Image (cartoon, rainbow, N blue to C red; front, side, top):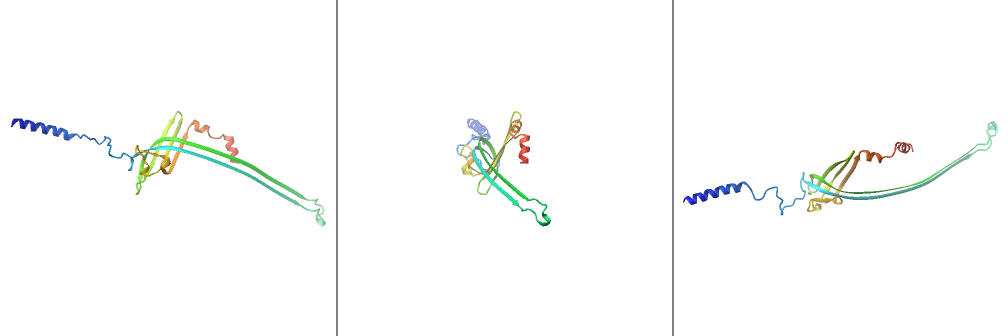
Length: 189
């Protein structure tokens, strides 16, 4: 009987210790649950792969001519010599512009809203300082849950109403602006 009481006490002590901790912690990654973003506050990685090319070309050509003439004055107007006026104006010009932009980046965003259909509204920003230059990238849009990959990423091409803003401040950005004389002449003409 004494052995039974000791064994029972030992089993109760072990069961109390075992009940305190679980074999499966909440932070452990489960192989059976989906860790993709699906609610407000979840994080999602956006793979920004954007490429845009635009070409614009324009030409114009105009010409105007005006002429007027009058005969010698007669009667009271005889002191007027023969009057004449001629004017002509022409202009022509052409211009072309071409731009190409390519952005490749990865940015983490936050789900800020979920609509009735389950679509995720996302927004995020990242700021970097490279020496005296400050760069900022902002992104927002809507993502279908089906477009979120198993590794919790989405391609920028799969985001609806996508807005990507890439801006910078600093010496490099200032050097890319046209000079003061060019801006003055552009303003006047």
